[in-house]
Length: 390
Image (cartoon, rainbow, N blue to C red; front, side, top):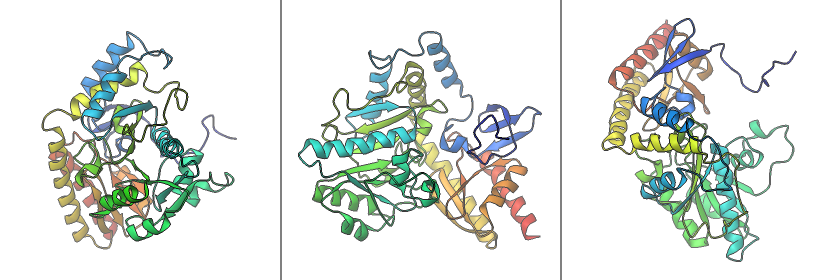
């Protein structure tokens, strides 16, 4: 008999009753160090007091009024994102997949508006992940997720991640833009090699294409910058983000330049719940914390501590771990042993981590972790590795 909740997830038999900072607790009181952060969502930890305060205050005023009217908070949050990014305008939605959908539409509409409606295809990369809608699945091109859902949505071509020669060769008369993750989260934490984003920018400028970054997972402070592409200093035309933007409250955003948004006029796109007053109150509170002086620098520092400790473990247990991947606190370890078994053993020892492609275990610590949390996590990982070798 099918379960009341559609069984689309391979869930662990574990239910949490409450969270506090970097920890989750079951009803029986067992404590877990949470290095999944809701898959890079609860970036400020669980039940951050500033987020609770702002959400509670807004909940007593107004939850929803629809985008038929001006929505309290949208101008402020959009303005803050614009002030700290490349963008000139922002569309609010509810999830990363929706943000990527909007980005795809912006790229296609731009080409149509400048007289090239035949340009509708986007070049994306193998190993990517852009969401679970039919078009975002097609954008990633992963057969595992496409199988059984009919022909993939048209309009996407694929090349190897990090290969500029392949990217340039794939540009054709129907190409509208390029869609890429600066760090591939679900795909195994491959990071754009130095010069790659600059090369993509050059290709787009040469051929009149729209450069789109998917920073749903890599954005909002996870690498020590507000957005991961800032490390190379190469801005896109369009950027999709979500996850940590709401700190656990569903909110996504598509950031665009004025030039790229030329075709996005009233009626071209919309969202019933996107950017509602509750979402905007929480997103504004998240930005209060993330944009505070020294916060992102602190993320960068603690990420270096974590990386050094992981590299030491990899060197100590070569039969268990192969290499450290990723950037900032979007980091993980490629395993020699099955990553699914590693995730389970760590969970049984009180550390929550997430799997990823290419046999990688992701450690998505909340951005508020300190060295004590890092040492606790490393102690658990080393204990599991030692037991494994025995």
